[in-house]
Length: 365
Image (tube, rainbow, N blue to C red; front, side):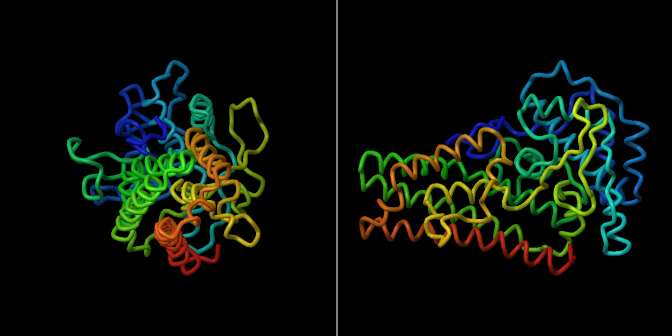
């Protein structure tokens, strides 16, 4: 489902499956009842702290070994990773709402989540833990009207942790912005081709196309990610089980052949591939005194395989061809290059500002 292309960009090739097949009826029911605030105005299981108990007593040990359809596998990956994070971090969310401290998470992921999740993740070559693109955002939307593009007013999340407006706008904003990443992928390819063929006119035109696509992305995020006041109501569930005090030494996946504690990073805004594409394409690490950008180091490895392959290709080609040197070799190209960097900087600043406004102000964690 996650094949980077000039048509869909970083979004999946097909719209995400909004409802699981009937075989997974109980899983679908628990996910529907899960959010702190449900869409119908009532409270869900996470509000009262009853989600874990319901999972332990009601969720069957589903056999997923016969499933190879990529669309169903992707939907199951999204749903089991949501399930896993909600189960593990439910005690922390309850504790935080009561005391503003997180306390300790559950350290054992029960077999009825862990075993199917490991099977699904292995088939998708993904890590068995909540992920930004494959779980929380890019495979977590439905179009209200399937005949209309995925604009901010035509999409809604499939799964939620808190159900608050801030969570909805975060998911909707990132998906609607990613709708324009096909143009970014196309422009990036044309930028590299322009350098390779020493076609200055084509190069400058591609730079303008990239800048226009980034401007649309920034415009959407600016209009959708305005309210961060309720970020703390779902932030807990985005936490990883690596280098986090609530997990101590990680998580045991019950029923797994690997009985060692697992440690995975959680969801971060930096996990969005848009920033990495720009960093690699324009060789922005060369502008850093240390020759690297700390916020980008290693983060590509946390993404879907297709993202990793595409970003690695862009990084290798931009270095081989010397995109930055070529751009600065002409006054006209330099102007286009700096215009693109203005949009990249605006995007990076928005990521930082959202984190600044939503995390340090509301929690010391």
